[in-house]
Length: 167
Image (cartoon, rainbow, N blue to C red; front, side, top):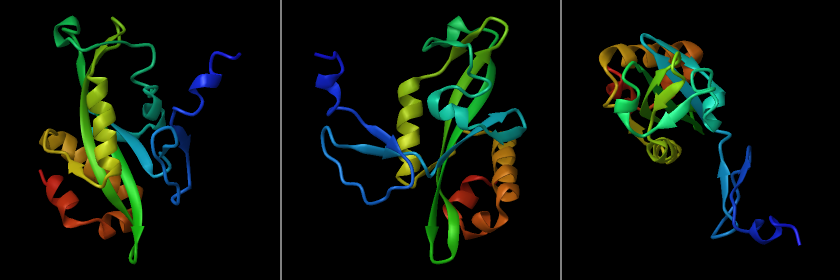
């Protein structure tokens, strides 16, 4: 018997483009097709889809810890989960949540709380905005990226997002 045969019905399947899927225990699906990951590095924000699997350019090769003191020379980064959706007016930014991490590239060590990253991705997918922890510089960088990436999506986005990104 294959070791994985007994586990096949208990996992989530990551799919894209399906919206009519119903799940329950052992039948759940997780649609990441509407989620993008944005990295904020200082005053620059950019899309890096590798972060969906903790393999963004800044995360590769890093050994992670949940103890900040183990990364004394860490550089602060923000990972922002952005979910898009469509309404009568068109596509818009439906959810956005920020997660903190520190990375010391030279020491190849980093600080982040994985559970927080997963929960914040979930909150974004549930159409929430959690951007209060971003400083003004990071808010401006994210706002600039969202506006320039697709001005129509920014225009169609709800006021709570625009309010959350006022610096």
